[in-house]
Image (tube, rainbow, N blue to C red; front, side, top):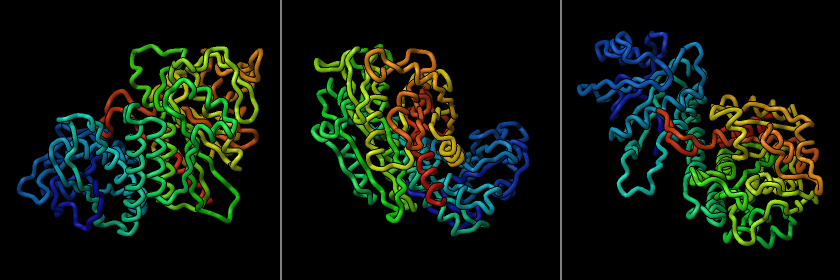
Length: 495
């Protein structure tokens, strides 16, 4: 999809459809007011008849065959006084999905009046949301039913700062394409997204976007003494890969942000086999790794002034003849011994060595992201991801950067009680502390591998993929945590 800008006034733009916003207070302003005037009050009539009430992503279509825009799609943006810029991503995504299914190839999108003075931010979310709204989940269907027809989105800059709109569209396009890259990696079934294929995808993208890339094979992983990672991989016929992407945006600085993502390309649970119901969704268990790869690509394109490394340990978790058994003891890169109580608590085992390697590289800040625990879904549902940390200042700066992105994170505690629950009788740690506080005991386990480095763990189990589509987003992978990671990197670069 191409996103560009045009200087036309909304009421005069030529397009397959014009998209204008309305608010739940019922007062028409900006583009909606101007277009309503040339339509003889048609939009006001919709509001008066309560055919649309202005709720976020609520839609109503008006045909206008005698006008250059042919159709007007009226989209709700909620309460005008409470508008947050990230709602514009939903506004644009809903428009693309609705019109694309109705064979509209080019649409023009109007900015709300609140964009004045904040054009770059609002335009960025429109571009991001439009591209995310075009995401195609039907790539394996011979005759797809819901593929979008929209190939061009025009953001209207009339009355706004043109250069700021251009800047916003540029950033939003990069972010939207990166989010969709993460979603495509996660959506691809495990037979077509093995650890080797994931490494190849990461390598191609890295070369395209100016990142340094290195992929460790099993021999190199063993040489680095990543015994915890290898214990998960040993049950699979697919060789493990350790993916490292580097962006050197500030060679004069010794600061290094490490982004670490869980890359389980398929999770059967291993010997502690999962129930068969919905196991097909375990192709999504590499969503954290996909998010790190995509975030690194976005950072490579946006070129912020900081140094970032992305680390993704990638493997399958399979119940083969060589698979790790409950009760086995393995040793992580930092020498910590781990009693494997449940082989389905495998994500933390591969992350342990990746966190150790981040420290070996000299990381000064670490953020990991993983679809780690079902307990997180019980705690927060699909509304937010959990954040746990060993550094309050770091997590507050992350939450402040992430909130405007539209991704939700909720800080949860990391009391010493949770660390105590992970003590083993015969090893340094065990890999599960049982059902109580499962998200937090998992976080306490990971804390043992970061040392004194400021660190945040993001459990995205409830947000990395969704069971139902929305007006602005397809069912399936969401691209979490790409937006927040990129926003945080940008915030660090700005000091």
